[in-house]
Length: 184
Length: 198
Image (cartoon, each protein chain N blue to C red):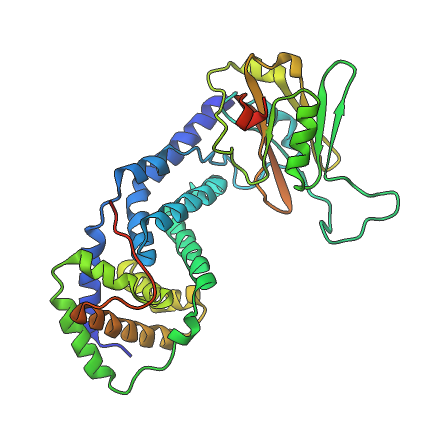
């Protein structure tokens, strides 16, 4: 009886992992820009979800819980490597113009691999803000809570990151720091 | 602030760029084929349930649970009350009792078990080493002959019956490094020089 229950739980978890893996991979890849890092982070995410599966399985949105674990793992890894606080500075005075320019550049994106490459050139914290807000579609307050800063800092960082993204896209120049690999 | 126009463009381009990502098949395969061992219960099993938890199948872990000593690892031991991280005792009937109190020195425990003639792999990070392969396909009765478990105070005690080990099988002990509660997993693996030392 117990064996049967364990098998059921195992299958239930496997089904969850199979269904959630693609979306989680996309989030992880957009945040890290690296396939190998994403695989490692996703594996760790599944391990942690499995350890808490007895509780997670009864949640309304287990995938959202897994995504939150993944995001925290990415941010923890990024904070070890980065010098990110410097990235969360005040918005430039010409923000309106910069936003218009960025919106135009993003509207013109037709090579999505190029876009992901440009995204990978951003500082980890800037990338995290954009991915959490505009891919994961989290509210500003939740992104601020995850990143440990104010809502105002999130919006100004998003604007600044978009401007840098647009600059990289239009100039086609890689940032001197950071690297990215593309999914095979 | 950020303009609505820019936010709309960002949402649009992220939706397209994200949807365009294809998960490499080999990555998906590695991710999904890994054994994650989902927990049945919302919390680690409490000590009173430990004895019932030792009758799992060969391919699954045997689960015994105990609270770690308070103050581990920083508090100084009281005179005469110092606890070793683990104890291995070989009995006259050939059985070997392993008591784990703290998740320290897995290599020492592994050496000790091997010295007692048990092909063993011990890690304290909650999963099998890559060099080890689970010994699948054994019946419940075989597993129950090899392992049994109980609680002694707050600590999990595993009893191994080496004579009942199937040919070419070894023992893997790999509790996850969770504090303050430790879940000790023990199972059968294929014996090999890289995994179990012989």
